[in-house]
Length: 197
Ligand SMILES: [Mg+2]
Image 1 (cartoon, rainbow, N blue to C red):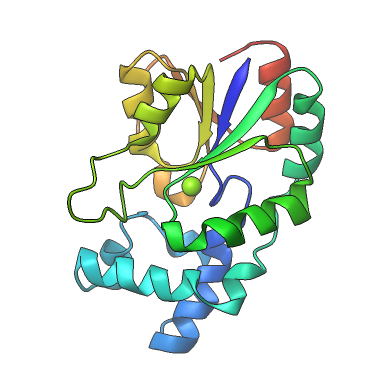
Image 2: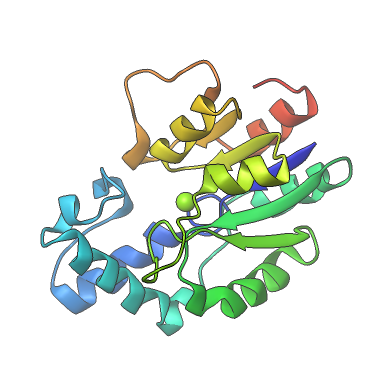
C-alpha cells in the first residue's frame, strides 16, 4: 500500500513546541490540552491571517528546527516501511521545505521516499489550489494518517480512508465510516498490518 503521512502532530510534536513559543512572545499560558481548535485564532484571538503569521514566525524560529518526534512514530514507520511505501504530505509553507527534509532525514532516516506540500494554508496569487485530497488522489494513496479532522473528512468523501490521530483539536462527536480514530503509533502499525481501517 501507499501510505500518506502528515507531519505536524503526526510525526512531529508541533503544538507542544508552539505553545511555549507563543507563551513567551505573547504572554499566554497555553498548553497542548488548551488547543481545542487547529484554527488557532479561535484559541488565542485575532484574525485568521494573524494566526497564520504567528505560525510562520514559529516555523522560521530555531525552536521549530528542533521539534521532537511523536512517541512511537520512528519505530512504527520503520516497521511499516518493510512492507509498504510511506510518503509525507504537509501544508507547511514552501520556505521550510528544505528544513523539513533535513528534519525527516535526521529523525526518520530514509523511511519516507517523498515529501509533498499542499498550498491550502500558504497559497500565492495565481497558484492553483493544491489540497491534500488532490495529492492523495493523484498519487493513489491508499490510506492517509492525519490529525486534522477536515482533511480526513475530505479524504473520506473522496473514498480515501484515513486514520485520525486523536488530539484535543479533533474530537468530533461522530466520524464517517472511512475515518478511524487512533490513539498511538503502535495502533496505527497494527491497523495497517491487519488492513483494519
Ligand atoms: Mg498535522
